[in-house]
Image (tube, rainbow, N blue to C red; front, side):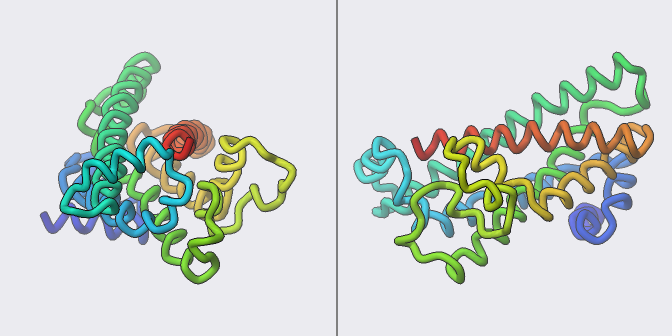
Length: 228
């Protein structure tokens, strides 16, 4: 248990140490638990802002169901469960793809599914952490009345601020992920790939960018679809 928590701490302070330990002892239970807690917490925090642009069909269903006597609790459960299920599906699908690719190209054949699965749950924690930073600053720079689209939740300066002419909600939200924290995300993924698969830093960086693009693409589709 202590090593699992150390892995989470080193994910920020020394990601290479985290993935080196996961390479020999692929533990993922604590990382998955922390992911679930963050998703539930963020779903509760963000509802006052997201209720303005949630799909009306969902809002009416929340009002009808009223879990724990609260529309907000119902919305939180819906968003949290959806996020956790999506995370689990992505973990299984991407880990399967990684193990297949590593076998086809004969990259560190000692790695098994559990290694990629553990690495996924640790690296994916960057996503809710970045979102938490956005939400933490949201009340400082935005009023609830100012939130009209999903992109309005993005406080950290990103590429979307340099392209006000873009109107497509999918492209606009995607561009909002291109920021300094996105670079940090790619850096952690690069360290994970280089450490586990044992390839050059350049190839690891290219692989990390591809993984990051796929992750962001999934997040964008999920968020925009929930609001349309």
